[in-house]
Amino acid sequence: MTRRYDLLQRIAGLDPVQDHLEIYQISAGQEFPWDYTRALEFALFRTYCVPSISKLLAATGEFEKRPQKRYDDTALLMAEIAAHGYDSPRGREALKVVNRAHGRYAISNDDMLYVLSTFIYDPIEWLSHYGWRPLHRHEKLAAFHYYSEVGRRMGIRDVPPSFEEFAAFKQSYEAEHFVYTDTNRKVGEYTVGLFAAWFPGFLRPAVRLAVRGMLDEPMLRAFGFTPAPGWVGASGRAGLKARAAGIRFLPPRRKSVLGVSKHNRTYPGYPQGYRPSDLGAPEPSPDLPAEHLRRGA
Image (cartoon, rainbow, N blue to C red; front, side, top):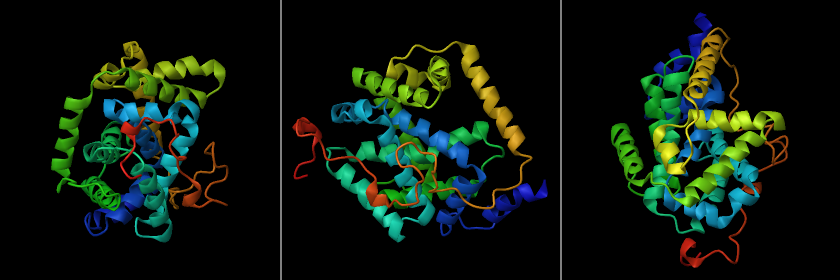
């Protein structure tokens, strides 16, 4: 059992400011890789509760036509940056792809800042409930410093200077901007459909119900979804906690799995044979309304 906490001891001995990348790589790639993946899926899902975000996504048609590719592109590009570092050759290449895609569209700085905040705080929230051990304070602060640096390289302005201030920004933004619109519902339904499509057909209705059972009340309201019966969410949470209890008895992961996604559905065997520049969204459709395009893009 002692070896199970070897990586935690290493994290405790590192500086969350100076060593934030190493701490984040250990936490996301070795200690909690499955949990970070699930938490970031729900983090992105959460951003679709903001009407200005869902309106753009619905207008591009990417969620309707290529939801799996959009999911894989986002997950793989962010994993590339984390696995290799934002200033590594592959990390800079991935950031270039991300920045080029965002640079085509009229996206407000506050919306970009909000999406960035979900990458920090949604995994922290998830792991506070379903992690096999509590996150160390260094892991929380490292996530903040890591994504603050990523945000600056994405040209996001006014990143709050402290962990607590950024958390307060996220909470305030959701309180103001989580409002129902038809585009929220449309993009939300496409996303639930994507999650369900990962399972055999006979299980998909149950998956759709289970996803609704995991959403909190502000998300359900913003999407206009009917809440699942209480027992659905309770069963899902119990299953995740049982999984965490079992994982406590496994040996620590020796090798990071960040940036390794052999089972993604768009790029088989990734990263073998692929570069970050092979990923990313296509050019905007010629019939996309001008209001969604950045001037001069």
